Image 1: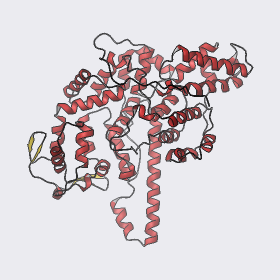
Image 2: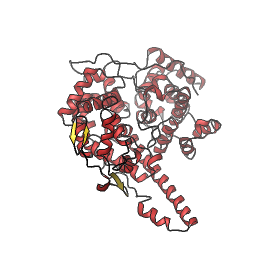
Image 3: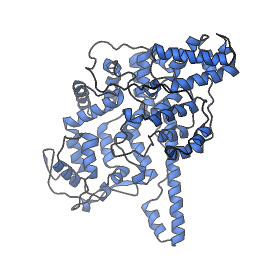
Image 4: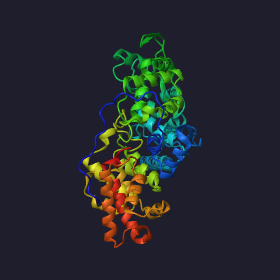
Length: 514
């Protein structure tokens, strides 16, 4: 495996003043940045097409996407009726049926995760995929607590249906979502014994942010949501368990219920500021200036919480392409693996992305806490950086997956869900960098080295890094006994050379950024 450079560049800690006014300078750099952040990276051809159709054309294409409506077909495993039936069975028979039910539930969730990752890898509706992933980290629930694949899948479909639509509709749907109600214990929230978990996260994480509500607000919101529960995977309002008494929430008084609370929250300017900050922080990767947050918060309120106008304005804003933003965000594991595949025209099994991301710390449907994944530089450790490089090597055909797992058999970090799933995966990539370089009509080491970097990386590299890539290509070409300018004429010898170069490129610090 190539040795890793010792220095890892830190993204800027805080934002400078946002660019304002002026025209958007639209070129390959800007098109690449937009496809990285609004999607999961673009191939050289997609970037060229983006430049040709212009910024407005590219943004319109991203926003035009509507998902396939059918979603993932799944069965309601472990319904209340089914569990009641099993309780009447003899002990041994009941235990066997429970074991089979848990197995079916695991298999259904695994099939769903592969379906989801297939979309991330190949769906043309990349912005919908991106926003679904964003909402999965904002409105988190965990299968570990919910323990129902069908409810987790239903939640995902709710997030997907509203991914580019109305935050108002999405918030209302999440408040009635069985997986969320169970994850945050609102299914046990009843009059006389309110449970505050859902109320606290609704205020702190989902709408207002920390410090913009009181403990009394939490208690009163919990009372307002008493009786909001679920039955057999469907929302159910248990009227007898609801506290219909008067409450005082954020200055509003009356016999407030859950619907009233949601409207009160959506009417708060702080709610718009919190969501504008969250979206800007996610897409730009740096702390947004206050003036920028206010501008986009005002837009959210003006558009009655519709997300498409917000995203359109952001992606056509020169400030979105400012120097400190482009190429400054550390990629999540999903972004890292899917980005390599999309940019390089590699078609890995969706299981590779799902399991590889889990191995790197991003196990979908299993967030580490109610706050989701921390992101940013938290994704990078010494161990994860080397593991990223090795998984990248698998994607480009330079590292054998089974050998990688065999060598790491004694590593506790490889005794995880991701490693177990990868161990069952018999796959090697069908990729030809030689064919890709030939199609571009290249010949010299310098041309090929630059084209490899352009294809595989989300960011431009410095001249010194470019020289290192070129030097490695020169070394591998000479070791293969190929004269200058003739590499691509020797396909059998050229491909191992180019795969080694690809692996080196994807082991660079720059490969961890987009």
